[in-house]
Image (cartoon, rainbow over all chains, first blue to last red; front, side, top):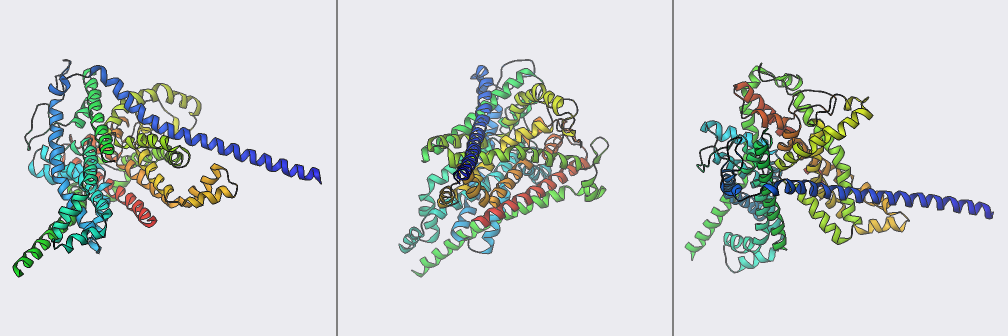
Length: 286
Length: 305
């Protein structure tokens, strides 16, 4: 009797030890996977920094691309081009997206709103190369030329659904009684929306917009055959325009060492810019 | 007074008309995208039926022959390869951050993982070209050929660039998407489920298996589909490391081509009308595939809420 009990006890103890061991092993695996993911980021970022910092110089921001074989030079044209296209894209995408978001949160109870919401979700998951293709067919082909304007439009198409959904989510957080208070004061509805609801959540809205801007400033694919590229400094809206991501791409796949180095420096600037936008907004808005 | 009321009503109507117009324009944008791509692919569809386009495997711009099978194959295989790596890893990350890590560590690591999503795709490509590809070529692939060379997946010379490199880069890129959705799915499970499992004597891992993984199957499926949607359409990083050869080979070491990368590579240089419109058709196909994938994912997410 006692020996049987002891045997059962041993058995459960053994089983328990095995289960415990499995649990410990899985815990270890989960820890490793989290470290691997974080390590992936640090690996990529660290490598970019390591490759770029020795070649980092002021001339990157002030110089123009040099012909093959001449070291130095910079990406002023690409930086300004990116600035132009991101600014114009933001200028188009933010009002459009915000209006759609306002509609969804303030008026969106019908069937139309469901479709708008669905369309925005689907639009935000369209591959960016397809967006570029769309703008090519819509703008570049009829105009018979690649242009900075087409590039900016492609970026705005990417930005619209991001801003729209973000605006909707934020405005839904505004309590109903605040709108009612405004209306009770006799303020027309559109003023209530603009000066009370939107104004009250401007912190969150700004964060969302800045994160969207960070996203579109790194986009390459939609610019490949809309804005194309330009070796010269050009800010004409209807001419091909250089941009930082496309320039990085061109330099990265080129066989020339000098250009590869420039690609690393460009990538460093781009990543730094995107990270700064991400961290600063998060930190400030907290 | 009456005039004022009229003005207010007019302003309100005007405002509503404006925002409704712009909201409708979002739908029009999506429909327009489909329509214009379809319109642009007309020339190709005149010379070849959609079915033949989809089922022939010769992609040869020089002879003006276009079959989309190799690029569809490349897209599907590279995406599934990336998810094969990234999905277990991301769920592991989500479990660790939500259930195991002390709050401070979870915050820091969670932030780092989120930042993975912020790195532009061209930077991943650059890293892939100069770090990952040489490493695969000189270290990993020779070893695989030597040890596992009898498998059709690991045959042929070690190029470095190819399906495997694309899968690896993609897996880094979809990881933050999948893990952030999974984290939300796990967060939605009430605390007492976990406590109940623990009270029954479950170990920590058994608790996760019983209380979390089992009950969040459809949520994890949605996370998988969202990751897949992202992998299918990813362009720059893949274009830079996949080797750009439209072929169907069983080996993961060989160069390949995806739908997105063929457009990125050839569109700006395409000269013949048929070539341009065949690429537009590939774009339309890609649009359709990602649309369906993401629609399924959204459906699951909406049902969860």
